[in-house]
Length: 220
Image (cartoon, rainbow, N blue to C red; front, top):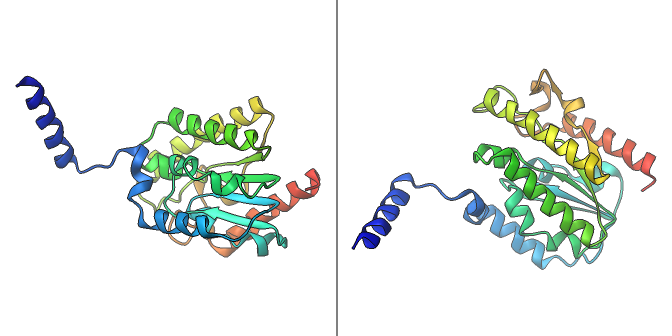
């Protein structure tokens, strides 16, 4: 009887809260399911560079921005590090040399702990390296004050980026600080955002400069 009451209580709490657990949020997204389905249908069999991320990555036409043909965008709007971890096959089956990663802001807005995000990042890196792909970690972008909970989340972004930079150093990976050109005072500059989090074409131009500099120096 007590066990039945406990189960009933858990069910009621779940209904009242109406919240989807963080580790399955990505499955609730119709956008995620649609784009993963398209990635599964893709007839592209190889690439030199893959971009992995959320809507901020998805918003960039990276092949045209970099002036390279063998570049594939694997960004999905609303995605978090859990969702990315579950679709890595659509990265490594292309056998790219590099994978640029930008993630974390959607995790933070789902109130995931920074330690959990770093653990997911580590799993992504481990998987890519197991397939002989060089991961490049890009800083999680700040949001502008016009975006919800900006002050709180920007503090967490700072903490996350410190941890990601440490992770890159520990693993001998490249860390590219995109905030260095898009943010000021610990927040995304208003001139570079359309709504407080998503980017203008001017922002993508500044971001591109960083990537082209890296690619030129690294001779990729």
